[in-house]
Length: 380
Image 1 (cartoon, rainbow, N blue to C red):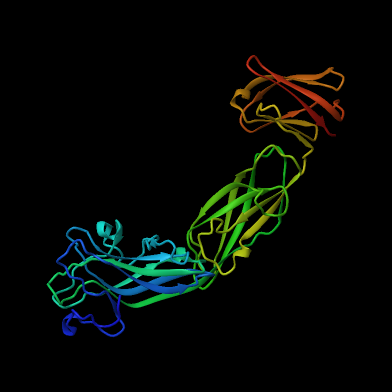
Image 2 (cartoon, rainbow, N blue to C red):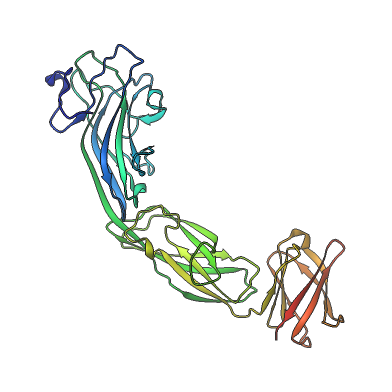
């Protein structure tokens, strides 16, 4: 693309003004010869920027009656090794692509249309929100055009023309406000209620995002932690705070009394932010009545907990749902207690006899279809 009058165009017909970028004229007689033109921008650093608006004025001619050829806008974030079409992800663009699939434009969407009249270029003011590029440190744009079509014959308005290319970018930051908040639970609870908070600071409001929650054995968020919950969030207005609640089913079986839950604002990195290091909030979950947990080492799907003299059963197998006989044997093999239980969804709390002393016991659970035997330590 060039920035001066093309030799085949007469100045008064082409209506080119200083500063416009435009394609050279291409002879329209040979339909098999359609060269591809590119106009590439310098690289832009969008690190720490959340709201990014791009605008320009554009004329783009082509064969609209066949949706064959025309032009579009692309971007690269890897130094030009690969290119993607700039799309209207937020459905807010002005005068964006007119056609979804143009055969001579590599089946990409694009613009294509006639000039207003002979010798008069038709410039549209075009605007698009490209905030999805926020956080990218090296973004290059390029206009792509492929056509040799004349609407009114040799020497008249043809091709693609661009002027007044402008980018306006504003800073944005999400901040997680809850840090190491203590929560006490009983092991009989199967869920935990987390009241979390996220603030939006900077020059502009936020975008749709995802808050992620992780279950951790310690106070460090790392790759060993388990993703247990996600929440799709609406944009948070600039200067505002989102206060929300997430009800979460935590992983079982429990193997310790204290756990940490981390929540990450913009957990899928959909927003470019000024500071990516203040997005993590946390809770400290203490199971106050935790004694010990016998893991299901026989793939039975049955997990047992003792707590304050109670036996807590949790089944993760449909085969273990329903009525069962329960027998408890001491270390010498003597049956110290037996009863009937019904196992269903969630945890079943069974009060053990006060006469049972602290020690190791064998738990025998059975019915006509299933049988499970486990050892469990009862703490007093």
